[in-house]
Image 1 (cartoon, rainbow, N blue to C red):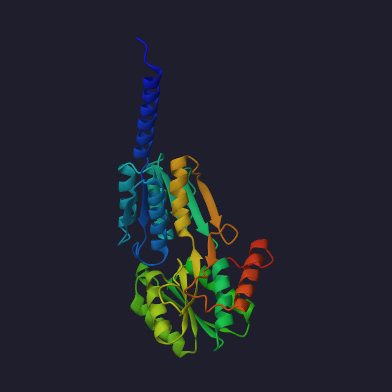
Image 2 (cartoon, helix red, strand yellow):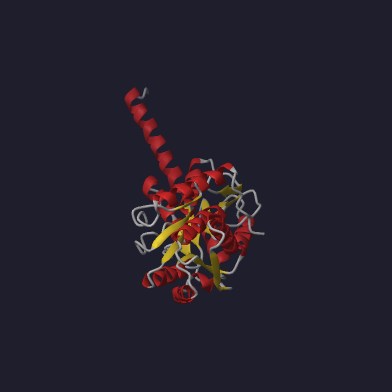
Length: 327
């Protein structure tokens, strides 16, 4: 029996559509946030926004887990892998050992690790040259300071945050060698990322010592830094995501780290079949980091400051300015 051409065409389209739906159903992205939660208004929230963008643009839902204690990391990642996750994004350097263990147990699952490196054939390690953006923020702080004293409040005292501080310090000195930098770390445990009260306390102490611009690299703790600066009539600098909107008119700028782009691209590439294992480094040249300029801080960044910042940015991209890597 001959099947009419139109009916045959409909059957082909039906099968193609069914296959496409099956492929979409088989693709299951997931993200595991680090301590501080997905609404920390900083690092984790940027990752969440990248996952939400993917969901909005593709209609594909994702699974997620928020870490509240260290013991959950490996368990959560392994559970997502067992439940059929196709690609799992682990947010934060503290998840490196868990990713390494689980990736070996699930060689067919793709893992994207943010802020650390694991050398396995099914792991993509994304690191950022944060020092390039914090250099620009240091320049902005020095150019805006009236007291010739600026501050830095870090979260957990780890090499990554020392790298933030180093770039910031170099940017300050590049813009004005006479400006003093006052530095404090919040703590030595993961709790340092989620203590706004401690952040406010450190900021007040630095303000008492004369700092009139304070940059935080402290996750949710930084909201306390920004509030204290606002209350004292001083300026703050946000971190990881664009935080200019949190305290409009008192946030000089933000050191933007495009974790959202890293998460979105990991999901998108895994779905398209173009995801690749290995190390990826993102800096100013790749639009992986930057300083933020928008309607919330436009009045704080003068045309002269903007010109200097943009020139320095171009010089970092071209290699004329070398920002040190923390070692």
